[in-house]
Length: 125
Image 1 (cartoon, rainbow, N blue to C red):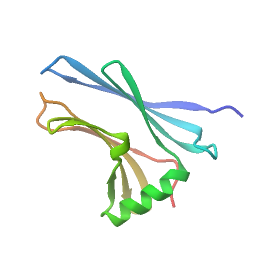
Image 2: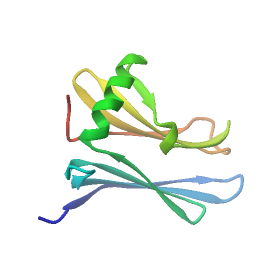
Image 3: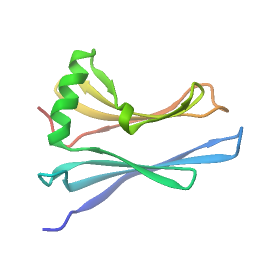
């Protein structure tokens, strides 16, 4: 069976300081990771480059454990772009009861607050 990909969301944040646009795409996939299980793939485009942040059950179980230990939310520093204090993109796993959510936050210099969206993950533990 081939991987079935469904686009859930696409959005962008424009920074008026330097006229850059940060684009985010969120996809639900039927097969991700080494075990080909359902998950979420977040693609973000920064300065002509594309990066991925993947949430699938194999890595998700460890992330959920770490998030619970840290109080319910875990920033994925390895999958985030933390350029400056006032310019960054942050991917986090949020544990909300028995639900798991992926949170994407984009902060640009020309906005006082980050733009944030959350997406429910298609698995739980």
